[in-house]
Length: 215
Image (tube, rainbow, N blue to C red; front, side, top):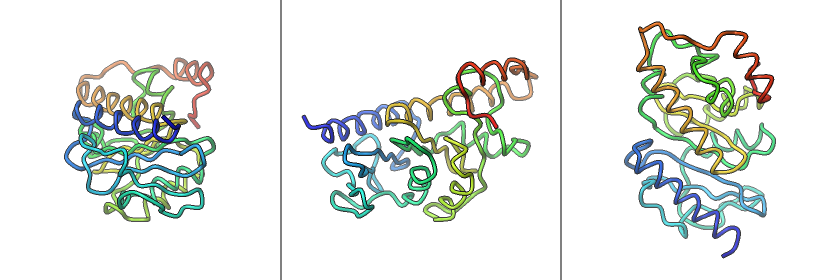
């Protein structure tokens, strides 16, 4: 099996796992990943994560030209913004995950720090998550909004839409977006209960020990 064939299989396996556990639904969500030659494999538009065909993933050449597979997701500008502004990005995952979308609709959410500092793990895997405003699906302005962050965020939350996470590889990106959804769920189920957050000192300790992007 070639490295690209293995990557195709991995994308489809991870996508099905996300789908089977209800982290995205129907034909929602999209994944992109760097190929060994510097190109991209991308999940096609209008396809279900539960039924992806490795052979039909959209294939981009290193110069950005579509050279094979089905028509890619309409969210390509969003994906490309992460590749263009952050070093060492190997994959980008976007889901329509229920709890994170619900949290994004709450009127008092901090746009600069979407996830409350409740556990060290969300901090470690995601850094500080920026809540972006609502955009129509496929709007290139989403990519412009990510570029406006100048590479300072590995994860953003699209209001009333879903999370987007960049990672070193597709497995890391999937793990991180799952952590985002879990943290959002935790925030929702403790909402109004005055839960104990990590203190400022505890947050600083996590940032120092794990080199977290928290500025």
